[in-house]
Image (cartoon, rainbow, N blue to C red; front, side):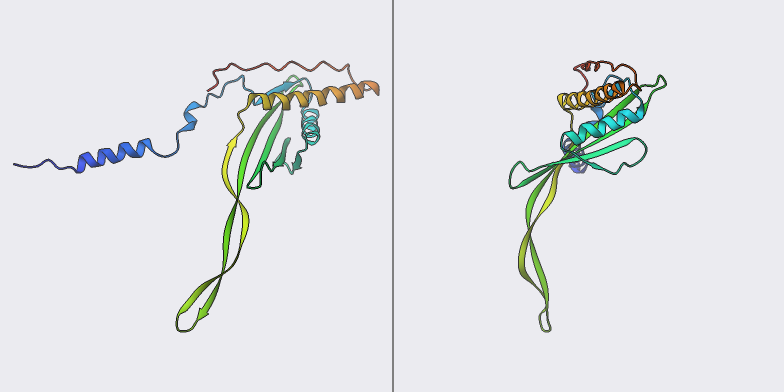
Length: 198
């Protein structure tokens, strides 16, 4: 009596296990909704919007980086929550002009966690009859990236966009005092997007 081959069964089991393991497909949850907390529209020009972004970030202790292109602002801020970890928060903002003279600021922040890990240092010593021998000469502690993700916190972006709006109002008020600007509008309230973004 012929015994059925186990190869197809084992192959199917391996494929199922491979599908269950590994990183999840996070892109499936991307909605690309028009109403998102990653952007905010202001009644100000592109240049003023980006200048207000820079001032808001500088006022919060960020360090500005060179822009990649056009009206883009890059800034970082570092944290040391304990002796073993270093956290870097990088925020990128792009200011895009709208046809009606207003501007929309798009912002995205990335948090990177670096862990200080001990790495041993060795020196190679050549011995004619034995060959090369590694001799430990000490150790160093260097940061190793262990986690990096885009900040998804709605309240974080609300605080950022509110700070940018306040800088725009301050600029317009200063211009009004000098007699070369229009009356400063009140900051527009932040509209929360729907809760079912993901």
